[in-house]
Amino acid sequence: MGRLDNKVAVITGGASGMGLAAVRLFAAEGAYVVAADMATDRLEKAVAELDTPNVRAVTLDVSSEESWQALVSETVSAFGRVDILVNNAGLHLGPEGGILQTTLADWNKVLSVDLTGTWLGMRTVIPEMQKVGKGSIINTSSVAAMLGGLADGGSAAYSAAKGGVRSLTKHAAQAFASDSIRVNSVHPGVTMTGGSGGNFDEEATARWMETLAKEVPLPPHYGEAIDQAYAYLYLASDEARYITGTELVVDGGWTSH
Image (tube, rainbow, N blue to C red; front, side, top):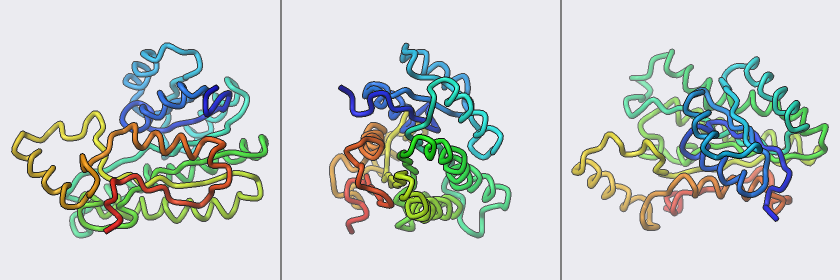
């Protein structure tokens, strides 16, 4: 018996990193999974490697209402319903994104993916969950919604967007509890995914690890994609049936300072 047997899950940002880790984990736990991403070639390759009919790759622009409508229509057509939504897709434009440095175009780009994409996902999926009579939504926020400085990587837009996801989650949890739809947020700390650290030389990596050791008390002072995927799994499962509107922080103790 899997923890998600026969549940239907939509996971955005499913081509890599935390999203792909969640796709693999949810499928292993018995779910039917729609893995969604803009990176179509990479997504289809990753899903093909799983070699299971229970996972489908669907191209999705999370900032597009029409794209969301098409994805939900395809999901319901293929699997009959939607039980779980993981709003994992996100965008971070790097460390040169302070308030005075950020252009309006970059600001709008980050918010369109990280915040508007989360809202559109819920707005499109919740009516299908209401038909089922229950559901679980997991929104990926960040420790950047709680801390400044290193936590947001220098990006004002990212900080604002993830703070918005945090608040929007609580709004939705209150609004749809009567429909037995649970809405929670996960707040990752430093998480090494496939692309993390790829541009650092050995000396820069050593300096980065020294910095992390001062901020994150739990060794090895950083997490991996699977650590966040397990948080998604718990909140998606019936084990969390009495949990809504909460913040699951997966950060090695960073925010405990």
